[in-house]
Length: 289
Length: 137
Image 1 (cartoon, rainbow over the protein chains, first blue to last red):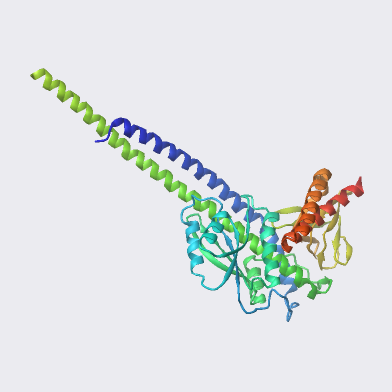
Image 2 (tube, rainbow over the protein chains, first blue to last red):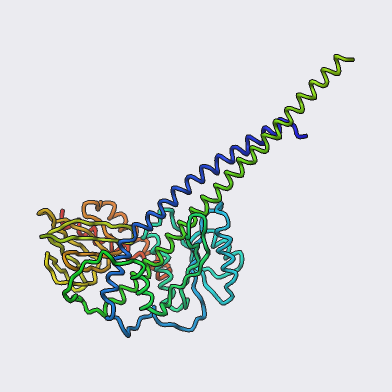
């Protein structure tokens, strides 16, 4: 049976680890809250965008724009949103499994160090790596977004897709590949967008809307802003996933530490009791002899 | 009678209040909006947006985006907006210099065009803010 002192030492170290994981769990929880809040703060923007799209409805038929043209795919362009730090359960592992399923030539742009490490280790082409703070300001997100759009327009990549962890709920995050460009069916995409941001608050005005400049000029700016906002939101979602995955992983670790401490305490008490019994036996034996 | 002005960016709702009039920096030039304006949809250029409320004129620097006038509501959709009073000229100057320097360096080294474009955006936005501040001094 193990020495009581050794057991005591182990209990102490496990308790310490448990305290650390508990702290990390709390930090992740508050960061997750913040990520969700910033996703909510972007709602009015999305709603206004949907309003504008619906007022332009029917005026944007037969337009051509590089974002809408489907070309032969030689190189897929994938934005991989992973995390900078580990200790978030299977989050990154699931994403990477998704990548190994891609067999066609692909160029990657990454957000998060873990993703870059994986891609370089497995000998895949990484065009650029960007970092993103936990605050996820729009100005930060703009850099990778503009980079992707540029690469797409120059023909370096023929699609823009995003691999990220979709936030289903706090306990479940699903790795997803989300195609962004080309926009195969603009009308459908816009309709869906308008439906998603249900327009109850729309101010009603029966007068005909004036367009300045003409409606057909809107498409460039509109597509640009639309795409940027969509990618920005995907990044926000990935962040929320990261923090909730970390929170859950740390909660499990804390629970495990607790049950380990319980087991060890039991073992310790048994060892202590055994030692006492042994001592009494020895004394009794000494007296009777 | 008054107008409701709303300015939204991807990050937050920057402005939402009753105002008497707005001057929008559109692609076609400055457009003044007063209550009862015809419904209008317009493209904004980076520039200054004038708001008159309570007899005072307030200024905001905005990046490119859209403006929608519908009923008595003016909605501005832009990628960035900052209130004139919150603009610190020194900070802007600093940021502008930094960006311009990085831009020059990047051009020299022949760096990524997209990085250059990004820097150009920063320069453009900070320049607008700076010009606004200087004009009012």
